[in-house]
Image: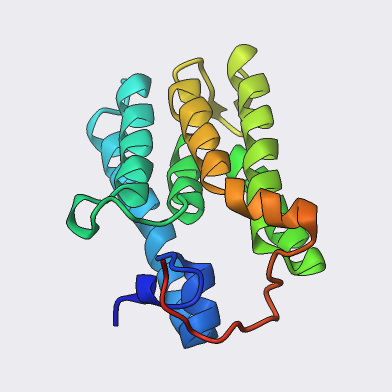
Length: 184
């Protein structure tokens, strides 16, 4: 099954959840988060002192997730892979990003939670990095922004059609299960 041929046409956990059900959606979500965790975690282990390489590994992981070569550069929106990478780069910022889950649950709009969680975690990481804050022994420096700024911009940009539908009041809620349809 090419999930991109059904529902919204996206390959992410939200479309999988709506099209194939919550179990399949949870598997995709966990896989995407793990992708970000593993690649960035291995980079942190291999080049512990080189913050710019760790940040680059996180950014490249999200780029590869969003624009995969093998499926004609039509990947996910980068939220889950970005969260996994962020958990390695700045665990406290990742906790702040989880505020998006609360927003998604309360509003039933996954896209709203994704955009707000991404924005809040970016803001936190900018502050932590600008002031080189250490939280629970975890250092932040300006290299973290090499990951955070472009990745956050890309994630929010990938949600531009969702944002337009939110403004118009046409965005699908999480509880709404649209009938599967061919993506255009």
